[in-house]
Length: 247
Image (tube, rainbow, N blue to C red):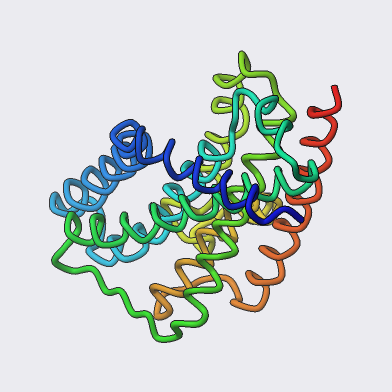
């Protein structure tokens, strides 16, 4: 493994991210913070929603930010220049995933205090198990980056709009981001179907780590599901990247 080439590609991705920092900030934080303000401040402040909703909303917003950031960081328009690097094709894909994970983690760690400031007072965040919080953040970041690689190498660039309307938007609305999984108990069939959505486990995992006093899926079940989806998307992404590189 040529670690020098690997590090150079990471440094290049970091440089590109710094150069496009304003665009990345708007793509990452604008929409989630608007949701935070409307649902967390306006709806709660008007009495349409209970004050406890603020704490339930925050983890889902973090999950959305991390997923969007990871997907966009890995979604690449061209890979030909990277294929010239003196490194195995698989490691090029792994570098893209690591770069996406780093950006997703930064987005999650930045939006946490920003959203807390917008929502306060009344946000009851408790990180009682720091290791659990770190594990959830890493697994969610890997999910977003691996998913971005799988999508980016499976769809043409002209289908970006289709990706949002047919894949990401339904994932978000049925991913327990704006509500806990237990809220779907009045729709038992739907409650079981959404368990096929990996974003459910990302949202519920962060909810379990940040708002442990609220109802959420079993932590063990969340960890198992996230590991499964991460491995599945990672293998799919590596396979699709190699196919795209060869073609």
